[in-house]
Length: 363
Ligand code: MRU
Figure 1 (cartoon, rainbow, N blue to C red):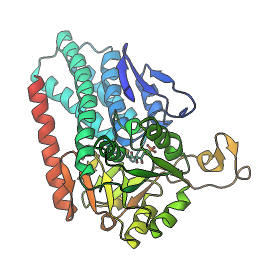
Figure 2: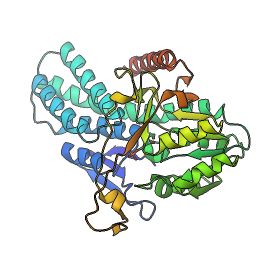
Figure 3: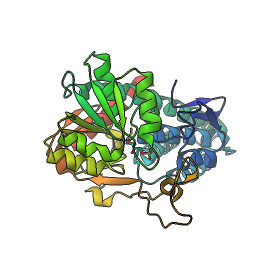
């Protein structure tokens, strides 16, 4: 089943807040509700957030009472603002809303204002959201098999956060590499970082890998350094919420510490992310906005207090790993190596051309 999908005129998704205890599908019938699903992390993971936002734009078009294209475009611009504000770090969110709004503007520029063309536009946006979701699954499989090439037979991998089917429409990014190795029969084993404070590793990655029967052990985040120093990790893999033009990577808090210790121990570090996660407009990681989330994520576990009442908490949700700690960035367009400013730009250009080619084929 897909993590997020369109059904009966609503955006539907697995409620990831309840996993692994309960598998519940939540429905979101309005644009502010879709934004809430992202902000409150019913859905999370950069590509899954992007697909959700794309369906949010299709929903905005469907719910708009506009009778002409100009009024519909105004409603879409308002919806984009609402959706983009839901979470700041994953660039896939604004990448997806921009893609749908740009398409709407292109169609509007080519069509006269009339009720019929507003309806055509509504259908075109839903088709584009569905295409984006389908494309995510195809891209993830390509990326996974690209990354599998650098994972040796019998390797022990260390993985941070959740980057699997749940973080995407299906298959995943860094976990996609692990699934590809498993499909190839490579006999790998995965160390799963629990990933405090929200425990995406313990709750989601462990759940996914156990279902897929990939050999794994869950570890406390603090165990990762020990495992790396004692030769029990061959490759580190993680995803990204945003990659700057120079190859600096924003990813789940704790990624930086893992990458630095890996470098100290001579272990290769691969970031796995689609070209939609690369933000060529930002020169380096210092320009990436880092989300700060509520104190309860640190001071409580499962709504149970683990710290004194009213303890002051600082809770940045992401960190920046400078490009010098990263061996390669695996994309659907191949593996980018340093100098990343050149290799990433070329991959993004190929990725954009592929989307355009696919769109022309659909016409
Ligand atoms: O706060 P989250 O759970 O949305 O953070 C997710 C991550 O940091 C993932 O590692 C990242 O989105 C890449 S996953 C495809």
